[in-house]
Image (cartoon, rainbow, N blue to C red; front, side, top):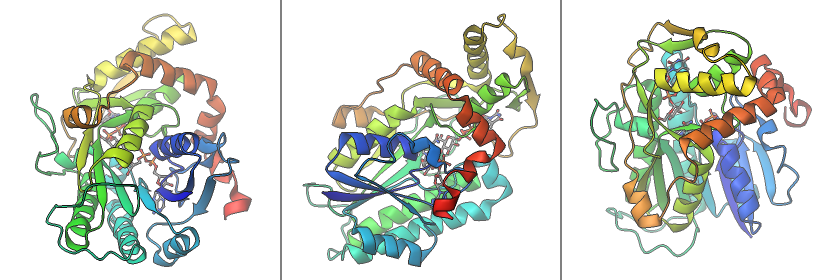
Length: 360
Ligand code: NAD
Ligand code: DAU
């Protein structure tokens, strides 16, 4: 058995990665290391929580002694690091939380990986030996936001210079730099990926798509920042989890991959499409939900456009999305309609009582 720590496994993307690894790899023990912040929800993992290869550790990545204890207990062969403060709007009102978790927390994990894996090789200058297995692999899951904002043309490539614009993206850029610096300086075997906007089941309803689904169900307004012409590139979360699996197992050490589905939408067009599908599924007259759209004050420093060029991942590792946006959005809406308990627990804060006795 190999022991793999997945940080942030109770969150949106992390829960899909944990599920995939538990189901695909019975020869891996999966240790979900998560602090259960407001964004962490063990209800996301109800279906796999009793599997013999699943372990949960309620641990804050910024707490050195807690993380050390997990390394001592589980002797991880590899770490897949997703735990982060992830919401741009929150980073604008409370940047320190992002600096703490995303920068200091990542540094903490890197220091412990370096110590426990007893790294000998120094100064890789980007040259790692050929990849043989997953031993001592640190996989850092990052975002396309580190590249900054595009105008109407072009795409983010792996070679695009970093130009983060929000406290969130600055903290993720800093963590990416630390991962690469540990690779170069201490020979930490790492891989890194930068993904575009995810959507799908278990997405926390502070983010655009699930917030609009929740508000349509409750007849509340759909807040569109600024003029709604801001553009995002959307990928179904399970396709992200498949990409992470592929990169984790097949990428050469020290490599970075951009992940995205060539699927750009202006926010206003996306919300209109969502309204249309919701009206159909709820049996409402077309145009009912669209009436809820309300233009509100813009996000400060709002990035105009993100668009990922994922050609490298496709050419080198053969990954491409399995789900079209039409299917993905439809599946997502169906999931929220079938899981209104989940949505209500999250919206009411009740999910934070789930397992409280066990883990607090
Ligand atoms: P999320 O906010 O849904 O989940 C984050 C998880 O991390 C939660 O379970 C939370 O409890 C945990 N966490 C937060 N602070 C912690 C701490 N100090 N110690 C331990 N656990 C902590 O986030 P997400 O959307 O699933 O994103 C996961 C990762 O993927 C992040 O690193 C994010 O930057 C990256 N990413 C997200 C997207 C996206 O569209 N959501 C796209 C690209 C990359
Ligand atoms: O690009 C990847 C990033 O995508 C991830 O790294 C982040 O963790 C993730 O949160 C996401 O960031 P965004 O800021 O792009 O996602 P969000 O859903 O918050 O917003 C999507 C777009 O919709 C953005 O242009 C802001 C806008 N928006 C958002 C909300 C919450 C609105 O117009 N109204 C809203 O109420």
